Image 1 (cartoon, rainbow, N blue to C red):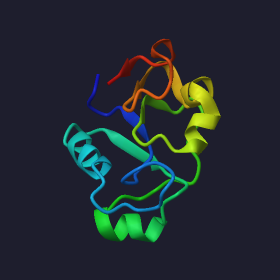
Image 2: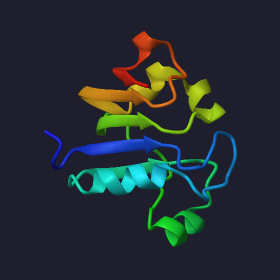
Image 3: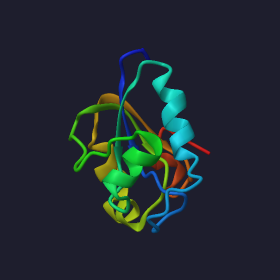
Amino acid sequence: MINGSKVLILGLTFKENCPDIRNTKVADMYAALKTFNIQLDVFDPWVNEVEAYDEYGIELIGTPLNKGYDGIILAVPHNDFIEMGAAKIKEFGNDGSVFYDVKSVFPANSSDIRL
């Protein structure tokens, strides 16, 4: 079920390891997912919270919830997330959650979906 699902987006910036959110495609992804009545949490330790809200209306979270998400999207491969590893990232998901590695930074068998 998509409607009402809770999804975590990891990363908001234009590119990895950089605080720049100008022209980020993650904001488009966020807006598209919102049309499906999905509850979204966005976590990005590189981004200024005020800037994210002022520019895109996105409220960042301080810490993702363990076992709190139906889906996890690794949208921007910051070193913070790569060092965390796929196993730790998957711990944010509940039983049956889906992990989508948009940039294919982890081995294919580490995620459920990837580009």
